[in-house]
Amino acid sequence: MSAARIRGWCPGAHRPMASGDGLVVRVRPPLGEITPDQARGLADLVDRHGNGIVELTSRANLQIRGVTAAAHETVIAGLAGLCLLDPDPATEARRNIVIDPFRPSDIADRQTRIAACLAEALQDADLAGLPSKFGFVVDAGRWRRLDGVSGDIRVEGSGDDLIVRADGCATGHLTRSAEDAVKMSMGLARWFLASGGVAADGRGRMARHLATGVMPPPDLMGDHAPTPSSDPPRPGADSGGLCVAAAFGQLEAEALRALARAGARILRITPWRMVFLPGIDSLDHVADTGGLLTDPDDPLLRVTACTGAPGCPQASVETRALARHLATTLPKDKTLHVSGCAKGCAHPAPADLTLVGRNGRFDLIRRGRAWHAPAQWWLLPAQITAAVQE
Ligand code: SF4
Image (cartoon, rainbow, N blue to C red; front, side, top):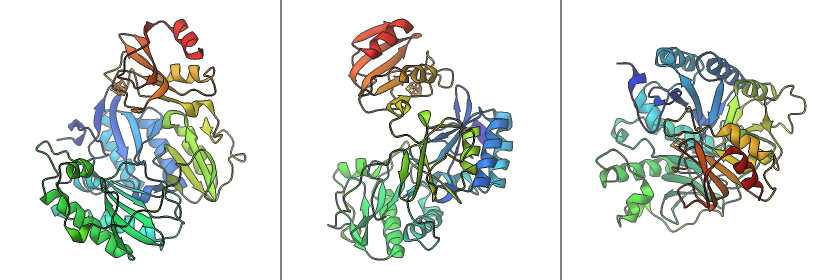
């Protein structure tokens, strides 16, 4: 059976998810980074077999949309040729690791070693039952930045040391060794499986499990707090490199090629829907940047929009063209979320203004979430423009 027929709520490359605009193929770059050659190869793949766009996800992955079932095998072969494919679907599903993108570019770096060893350890067959959304976060750099990133087992900095912390616990177990941190992480993962963390439908998260009152054994717990977290980065110079964003987290193939030309040895994919280019201080020398954003005050950064129609079958409205248009007149102190339906996938948090599609028009919610009660109903385009500027 073609893997393309499998539908799941957490897609991979081997197991894509069907969507309104074709298959969604998620690529999990090893160690959260790709080379300029891999970026160029991906750009060619999405031009030939996708919708010409690579999406950046909140778990530092890359997503190709609009792949036909017939083209899936070709895309898989292309990803394998670029060394961006796990050997099998089970390995791919378990390798959910977000790593500090600002770590030193050195194979001996402590965080790099931890993430590489976690990826290897996760291949053990007895971990096959871990839910597909169950993930690991490696956030042990000089500045911790990944506090807001979803993860179930977290390896974090605590002063000069490391702690391993189950998500949902305020503190974790202290260790000085990267190898011990990996062993402890695997111990927590096995405890999660053995203690009933996975529901009958195969889903489960650590924090939800702990909230039921179960606790890991004392040797996997500790009373050491992580180093306080710093703010998430913004586009622009950061940590000896450049953070580059794309409107709505969508990199056009040309923009990916521009990033490959920027001169960085490696492109780090971040969970903030940006790419970090170590050692680069601007894109001024790059011709045709394909709409890349490096200005932290760019109005497009205050606007979010989900896939909308036609990509999402739940949507009755197109979202991103409207969001892009409204960004040009959005007051400087306002945030805007354009959602294809009341699910609010792209921005579950409140926004100053939230437009929610319904039967081809939009409802407007002020200072709320997509599923909150609207202040205005079923607006026409001219009414939307006026309402957003109020
Ligand atoms: S918010 Fe609704 S329309 Fe938008 S991507 Fe989610 S389900 Fe689809």
